[in-house]
Length: 91
Image (cartoon, rainbow, N blue to C red):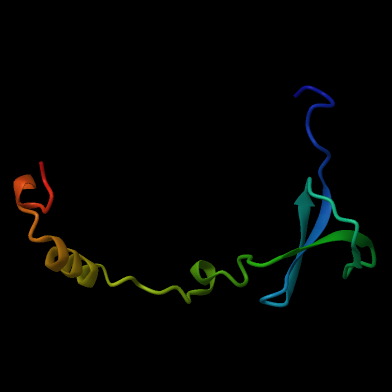
């Protein structure tokens, strides 16, 4: 790798306010706010709204979309769609 073209990576604490969870990782992001970590050292802290601790995909709280209902609603609104000429406003 070329020297001096890559940003400096450092330990940073990311704090998820929604789940009240914090984790230490390496990042190029920096913050003026500092926090003391479990190991006794202080690190920059960045507050995030969503992380793997609070996102529904990772927590299992995601909702299953009713795709069959949406298809039926589309067909009621725009017809069966069997042929392009049967669509409203088709030219």
